[in-house]
Length: 493
Ligand SMILES: Cc1cc2nc3c(=O)[nH]c(=O)nc-3n(C[C@H](O)[C@H](O)[C@H](O)COP(=O)(O)OP(=O)(O)OC[C@H]3O[C@@H](n4cnc5c(N)ncnc54)[C@H](O)[C@@H]3O)c2cc1C
Image: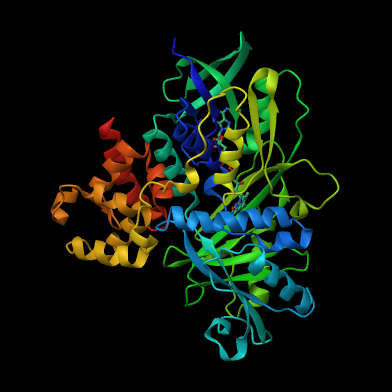
């Protein structure tokens, strides 16, 4: 038997963890249960952009784009180590959208908010500009604009850390099984997926933030639900670096969708995404058709031909979007929606974007005033995310100082630490004065000291948690390297 919680949140993706961080920051007692690892589903399978979403303008979704652009600026300020500006080049393809439409779209993108710190869009001549070098020679004109990139899984982890530091309990590998509302409180049964043990918790409010599983979870909570969602799968491929230069491309397609080509993890290029209807059996693998769609798009625009054999990694994620039978999948709004069942203290989150998670979380907790009349205002707009307390939000200066302070660390490792952990990298290196102090070297700059830190501070339990969500070293690790890490982890438990 446990004492009564204020909020029990089901789902440890960006929305669940964002709500946990907001609620715990306001002094509520919070528990999050995640059936797998933090960010193990959609929130680690996104295009990793903090963006307004240029293409949503075409669907007149001005509210969403404006909100996302405002949040882009907020998040740049709150996590300058993890979120950084990225230039996008849009090659003009005369058979698709007319030039004037693109110019109007970019004008709106520049002006829907008044606080952007990013450069404005402009027209460029691809014939005499290095940003056109990788493109087929038929493309003469392009447009440049800025958005931001991030590491999606780490953004979720930062929110989990923030929640924990304000007293929240985060239970990973802990599955929500059932819940009953009686005498104005929820009795919730959770299962520890490692030991199979059942646990009972009591909570004033229950939050369903299970992303693509939202319907599944809802059915376990209430006998009849009016909730309807569209499940849409999107896939990405990763290939070795396709071109020089730290800028992305946004490519238009005949089906009115866009494909991003994004420089990724120094030596790679990330390409995505597709939009296909998903069934409830959640096929999380990219299909051959989706691969072909992405490869064909790249090969239409770029000089270098790529084939399936270039693909080193692929991943898919599923969005739960607001129900809509009128529009094409790509045209359904990505804006979030809540369903609050007052007489049961049940709040359900539908849809959303990585970019708008902070305001989604703030809005979600604001909805709960009725249950917590003395609720404090949200603090998240003014609270740096863990590791983000970088002077003048100047990441470059921070990195330079960090590399000087830890001159014994190879620059590539120091840079990775600074980007991944921000100012928390100093915590990771507390009492360490030489490479010898970092312990066993697993491979590619992953040392025992970092693995211990991730297991103690960031809920990592398996090599996959460490190689694909806490870091992206999985892109470099061989099977043998992973086995070595697995063996070491097995000895710790
Ligand atoms: C292909 C693709 C690309 C995208 N790109 C971008 C982008 O570039 N920028 C952007 O802003 N947005 C992007 N998005 C949107 C964004 O990724 C999603 O809106 C967001 O990740 C959804 O987060 P979530 O927390 O709702 O869901 P999830 O991340 O899926 O989290 C739900 C969690 O609930 C857990 N869960 C489910 N059932 C249970 C249970 N019974 N017990 C316990 N836990 C449970 C799951 O394990 C999961 O971890 C993209 C989405 C997709 C699909």
